[in-house]
Length: 259
Length: 347
Image (tube, rainbow over all chains, first blue to last red; front, top):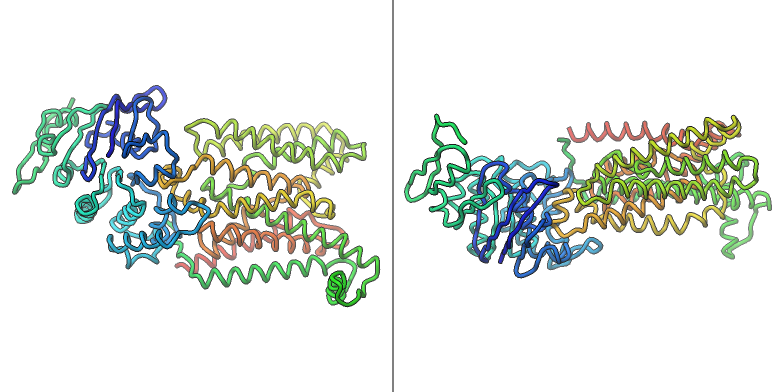
């Protein structure tokens, strides 16, 4: 579904991400983890088609993202940035309906089909009670659900999320990740996300990819990646993995200096 | 963060109705108010007689005053107000900057230099009236094109890069204009100032016809971009992820609003403040969606400028106040009042 082949990304003379080859199967969830500055945000932006590769390619469903029109791309992959901009004065339902622009275009009003999709998503994400509210007035948890709703309204097979749990309390973190899990299981959605919380990443994700200094250090089932020696090395601080009722909990250990 | 309550549909309808009413009042004032007193009913009867209904009660002189002086001035005022307002609103959307308007990217400075060149260099010739709009228009377009070449072409350019390029280009053009002005005669300086402050006094059907195609096409493009500007309110990257070709859209919209503004400025001079204040007043009344702001700004701007011009030519009659001064004197307090009402209403 998502295929990165020898992908490198640069900003000026700096290489952000080097020679990454990664295939994510349809209907699965792949999480990119790694320390700050590893290149996670750049990598997922490239998967969403918002960053052009310096070399290599990003394909979704067989389409090279640099070769298709932005409108076609928006029907293949949706993107939830780490800090979404939520304009004041826009109703929640209007905000979610922005996800349909690639379908009806900027010169036409939404079709009946577009409105039905938006209704469906508002229902599924339990946003009906907020639909008339100003989108900028929502709490952090409600807001994140609204942004996710906009991405789901794009009705793409792939959704890319950059740190979708940033700034949320533990309950709202669980809410968002459960919602995504449900979409993966029930609708066959393919998710590529970054997460900074290793325990949550291990709890929800089939597969973890450890990124460090722009390169993939480790790639595999979450259970194996959190136990790899590479993990502590990448973060530069010792980590311990504790098994709590079958779930891996990643705990930092105090009193050691890093790299 | 300021909380903005999305306006009800009823409120939008009421504001639209009031704006249409204001436009009708503006047409009335533009035709009826003036130093020569002519009854409104006679003007109306004359208008009907032109349509083959009834016969006119106006003398030939009165008819000339109404249809060759007041009417073109009113129509030009409407075109100017509509274009400046819709272009300002469009710029604010496309740059996501509340202080943006076409003047920002060099239209004002470029037109100013062009007009000054025409007035200073050809001041003795009878050709000045012909050359002033042409050179003003050319100056405005050169300045905006230069801004775009410097700030808008690199792949990593952001709206801020373009605005900064506009500031630099404006500074360059303004300094050249100031130099020219400083080298010229006192008489030319006075004429340059009159042009800089903007006026509808030289309006004719000829000038209306010159700007009409520009204004119609450019205003239609701006209004049609409303939905796209709403999408752009989530920022460039997110708008792109939603399927918008942000760079080409910005090019089209900036080109349309700059071209329309340059056409207007070349004929009426630099009327300030309309592009900033009208869209903001409309935004305070009908909310943040450009699908509502832009079409209402067209009407509001048209009505606003004609009413301001009516004040400009009556307050100190028989002499006229500079229109740019009047727009600021009327616009600023109105803006402050609406802003404070809005605060009271939302707290």
